[in-house]
Image (cartoon, rainbow, N blue to C red):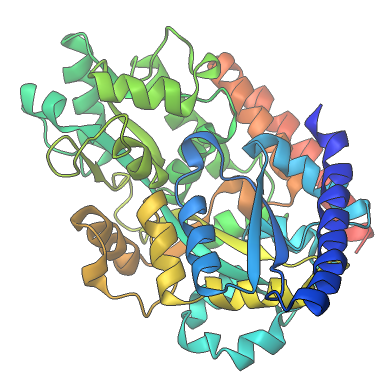
Length: 437
């Protein structure tokens, strides 16, 4: 219901701002009043348990840029994925969007404004590493995205539960299976999985594949150069099924019926489950005023265990950024906001609220909490960094994959047929994408 109304809402915001400027300008000439603030609209998906940091980011910008007022408009995470296309097509988009770096930004890059001018003027090559810039900001040789978060996917666990059962964080696949067995015998759900929104399940596919096949193969898979019915993909589902067969995940409620935050994370918080595989945005939720957990005391994290020691360890995660659509009402204000958001203070503000690392490499390590420093170290020591499945794969193919993961969780024994169907459908989608390029 929100999506059809959103473009009209944004038109109203833009029109109101324009009228405000005209009216206030006239008033300023008569009364000598200060110039009115110019609105900069940002449509974003940082809502609910993912909302940490956005208010801090906006406040920090508005405080330091009194000539502008950054107006943030939120939309549900899942609804945003389709609504961004609606607002772009309306011809009257907001001034800025939040968006995921990778294939999703690549899919709309022809409707975005290049940022090479401000990138050079603001010396952003000094703020972001070459590898991050290439992975997150550069598309077709031009810069289009300002990174504002860097997240890392890992296991987050209840320290009291681990201590009560004398468990240390598993470092290998065998360790993980043994940990699941110990916890299951003690009546504790080993791993909470909340896949109601589908995307949380992808972390299992991603990391099981990345721990058993080179990152180059995974890249070939998500770009259409390899097929989903490859033996290495089938082996990934078979290994995932092993965890299900051993009762490692919650069965009631079923993962497909459980939310990742109010469901799986809460199971870990209450001690009903020992751990969950999730991104570092979990830090923001566990440490919020409602939970007040402290990292290292109440909870902690560990990387996904090693399965094949011959496979270089890849880090999995998300980079959120800000993009500027063409035809925005206030391009000057949008660019001013983008330059600001790349700066140290702005990136720190978002990090405080979200639990994310700041992509700006000039942020000193001492700024971070102990757990964030250790996350940063894990990323640094990884052989490669890659985006989640639905951010590394073209959106139309990503949807097929998320549906397949959900179907697998419902019918794990049917994975050969599920994978075969996914391979056939994905091949058609990839060919369609190539045809329309």
